[in-house]
Length: 104
Length: 283
Image (cartoon, rainbow over all chains, first blue to last red):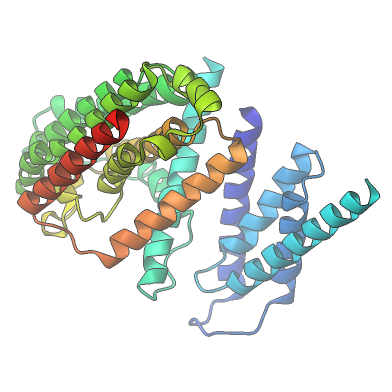
C-alpha cells in the first residue's frame, strides 16, 4: 500500500509545482496559445514512463510527478500537451506490445 | 496501525483528487476551464491553517465534537472497508451515523442555514434506503455480508453487476446522492449557502472536507469492490475515474431537486430496483 501513497504524493507534489510554475510563466490574462514545447516534452516523458511500466515503482512515481506537473497547470494550459502525451505513450505501448508479440 | 494510517491518507488524497476531477468535469460540461483537480485538496489543507472562529450561538462542546466524530466515523469506514474488508453491515452503520452527524452538525452551530440543513438531513436519510436494499440483495445473492467473501464469490461466479444490475444501480444512486452538486444533495442546496457546513471555519471546516474526501473514496471503493469483483488496482483507478466522470456529467446537467421530490425519486428508484432484482433472482 505504501507504493500507492508514494504515487499519490508524487502526483500531488508535481501538480502543485506545475501550478506554481505555470502561474509564474503565464501571468497574463488567459489566451489560447500554441503548444508549449517544454510542457509537451515533460508530458510525453511522464506518460511514456508511466504507461510503459518498466517494472520500477520509482520510475512510475517520477512519471506521475511529470504527469501531474503538466496536467495541473493553470486552468486552460497544459491540456493539449497532456492529450499528445497520452496518445504518444499509448502508441509506443502498442508498438512495444506488437514487437514483443512478434518476437515471442 | 501503520497500514490503517497509510490507507486513511490514501483515501484522503485519492478522494480529494477524485472530487477535484468531479468538479473539473462539471466545469468542462458547462464550458468553463474549471479549477485544477488538486483544488479540492488545496482547499482542505488551506483550512487547517486558517483561523478557527466559533459562533456565539454555537452549542459548545457539541459543535466541535461532532466534527471529530464525523472524521472518526469515516476512518472506521476505511478500516472496515479497504483495510480489513469486513462486513457490509459495519459500513451501513457508518453511513447511518454519518447522516446523524450531518443532522447534528447543522443544529449545533445555531445558524438558520445550518438548522434548515439539519431538517433536510432527516429527509435525506432516504438515501439509506437504496444502500440497505442493495446490501440485502447482495446478501440474498451471495449468502454473506463479508466483503472479502463477496469478492471471493465474484471470483467464482463473475461480477455481481452482471447478475444483480439493479442492485448496482441502486448503490450508484446512493453515490450520486453523496456527490457534490448532486440533484439529491438537499442538505447543501444553494439556498442554504453550504448547508450544515455554513458556520464551520478553519480547522473544523478542514476536518469536514477531510471526512468528505474519505467518504467519497470509501463509497466508490465499496461500489467497485462489491459489484465488479476482484479487480486490480489499475482497474480500480479506472473505475474511480469513470464514476467521477459520470456523476460529474449528471450533476452538471441536472438541477437540484426540491427536498420532497428528491426523497420521492430516491424511494421510487429504490422500490423499482428492489422488486426488479427480487424478480431476477426468483426467475
